[in-house]
Length: 367
Image 1 (cartoon, helix red, strand yellow):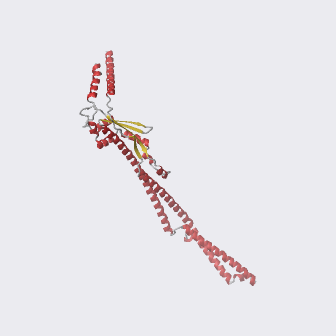
Image 2 (tube, rainbow, N blue to C red):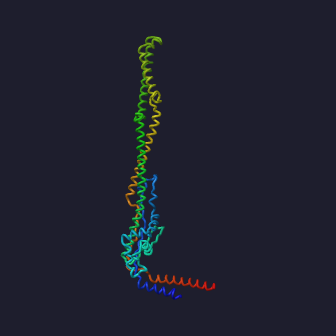
Image 3 (cartoon, rainbow, N blue to C red):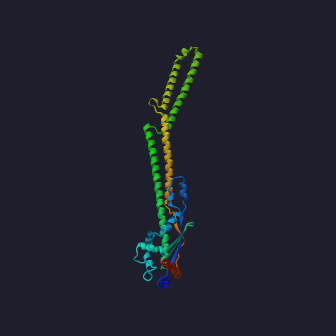
């Protein structure tokens, strides 16, 4: 039984490896996911809400790319580009164990891909190394090169989604800021049309200047009348009644009364009495609307700057799959390494025989 379980399978496997197994070449490529700095855009967007985290970090991009290397989508893409089936099925007629069945499905091709494409990843350095095996040296080198191209396209496709999302968000913010500014200006325009005033502050300043001028005229007329009364009293030795009845005094008094009434009328405008404008209320409402317009203008300027910065950032590629060790071209076949395979096969059959013997002797002892 030992001969049938261990030496015979090992001998058959050795004969197959020597006679039928086709030599396999390999090509190795190493690359990292490189992120371009975006300091300019970041400085313009400082302090503003962004969704830049959606773009991902180089480390997370490398993790995604490492998992993508085993995906059926990548296999289908590369098979479409360079015909993986023809590359790996050429040896199937002579070597059905290591070759690929040309009639296999995409699922079969994906499983075979995982046998022939070995990958490793160093999370600390972010380095991904891929080894591609096949029966043609140039073919496996082409596959390795295509892996880098496909990985770069996938990473940039993810970045494009994030960049489009950031640009859309910045555009929405700009649209809302523009609407706020338009509404604030429309409200201020409606206020001016309703009260028939462009700038209450300027109009109030004009009204105050009128009052001040009337007060100055009143003071001058009062002083003039007092001066005239004093002069008449000294020159004519008249009593108080005669001075008051003097035509010049009466005319001066009438001017004083007119000035005082006009001052009272102008002052009533500030309180809003008698149908006059309430400047206190107008000033409060106008200042509130003016502040709203100023804030809306500042918000629009900030949103416009953020949109332009985001658009400039979206116009350039920010993620790269950089291959620091390009795909190598093999000069000799390194696989399938018959000695190592025979050792593994022999050890496997020997362990199987040992386990079988333990089971047999265990059952025999129970009897």
